[in-house]
Length: 261
Image (cartoon, rainbow, N blue to C red; front, side, top):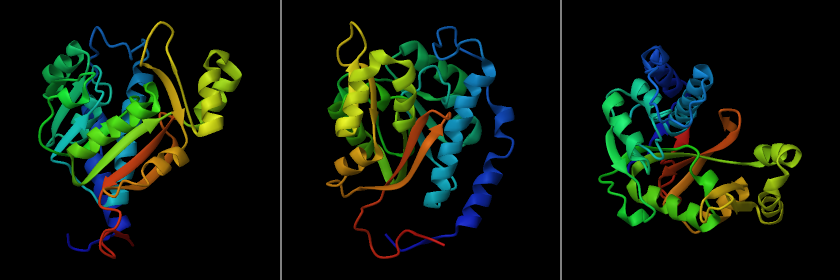
């Protein structure tokens, strides 16, 4: 791959121009079964806009101005999918979730490709590669080994120079829980002791709530030579979850292959 220099100012201007007025195009139609909608449309859409803002930041950092294919996993009933569709109307968007009615709604409303997710990650019927994989509020629900399995899945389906934007609970969320959620003490203790805390939801096995530090993730990626961490934004997603940006670019790439100027 040839060397390239990223003109930050030019890229930022191009991304800003692309996103100008996109919020006016975002669908306000809410699926009847959308559990993320609690009667507050502004708050609901605010999370979607925050997701796009995180993507825009990742684009500027990596010199990206467009996407051909986008994967939103988990899409749910399209809280963020709708905003991605409005911001990148030329992109082929895949909405993937375990909820069949959710991916169907995304297909009907936003023209996305519906893909039903699976507990067996190798059985998820994804195909091709994606320039952007958006992962909001997924790793926040699994233990350490499962989180790493998902990251491996995303790496396989990223295009070269593709961007993975994914959220996690970090130290701000944990601090809030210290004062208001004593039932999450196992998560807090794991976070403090090892940089990763997790507990199952009551009565559920293998699905719950987690939090991890940037240091924990960086250490786990130390042996991965295909993903480069280019961004970490604390409380970047809806002023609550942290957001990581990983680029599918070999860590030991040629000198000056990715330079910001």
